[in-house]
Length: 123
Image (cartoon, rainbow, N blue to C red):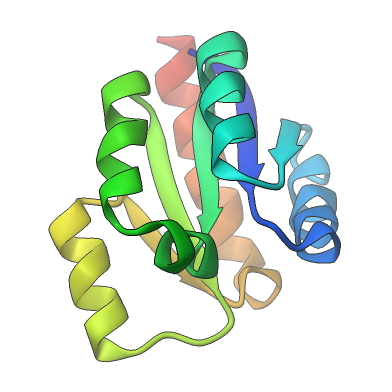
């Protein structure tokens, strides 16, 4: 596991926005637009944190989270602009580590998550 992150989102503009936020924290960030690229990146890059859009999970199914967990031991963070109670319940059942609503508006929380992840990777 490395001090890098992976963003999984089919929307390139959203990936770029999140990547800019993570660069502020000097966090190396990879990105991919689909789940097959994601699996390859998880195996080859070994990111410490995986950010995945809720829409990507809805499109592929929440069982994709388990597939990620089988390949990855770091944090899994779901992010979205809108979330329902049912979405949150599915995220809890899938055992994601964090759900971020509007990451660009939760910069302090994002910084805390990234800082904590970096410290655990360094240990």
